[in-house]
Length: 131
Image 1 (cartoon, rainbow, N blue to C red):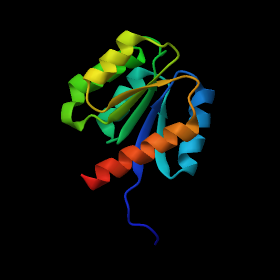
Image 2: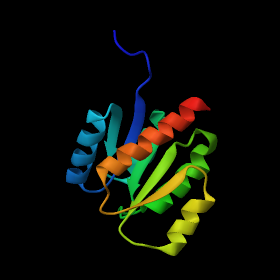
Image 3: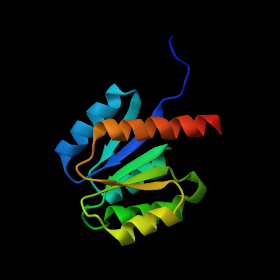
């Protein structure tokens, strides 16, 4: 029945449904299993129910922004927390410093290149499979 390799699960979080559709479609085509959430609250609920390898969140969410979501996940899920990407439209030194201090977190500038994102995911999963 083909490959026995486990699918890599990704949770995409953005408050714009069309952004989620475009990103999900691209990641699906590249062999990833992708779930989507339109808010931080929904994402936290999904993380409690499922195990994800990667979280990709926009910083411009309502209520909790992407940075607050990542901080919450890091606190609540600790060793079970997925690798996380924060997508932001600001070139903020404080945000870069914040992400550099945390393990397995990377900031990505908008407009995001889906080719670059897929490349980073492939690198990330390749690295973890070797460990």
